[in-house]
Length: 83
Image (cartoon, rainbow, N blue to C red; front, side):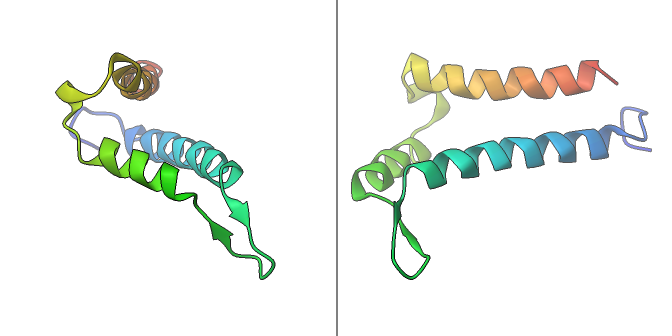
């Protein structure tokens, strides 16, 4: 049992994490350039954008970028409330 008393919380959060990661990977791969050998190339413009986001503190993100993180937080809360 976990610290908040629900034996399923770990699995519920792991399932959500996988779904979130899968969605991100589908998005990422949709933005890549497919190479003849089966590999992909991420456009430099996207790398720079994501690197900037990665290195920016949450408080300094744009409202739109914070809304994306808020959506993820809301989804985690939904999992926790559904237990």
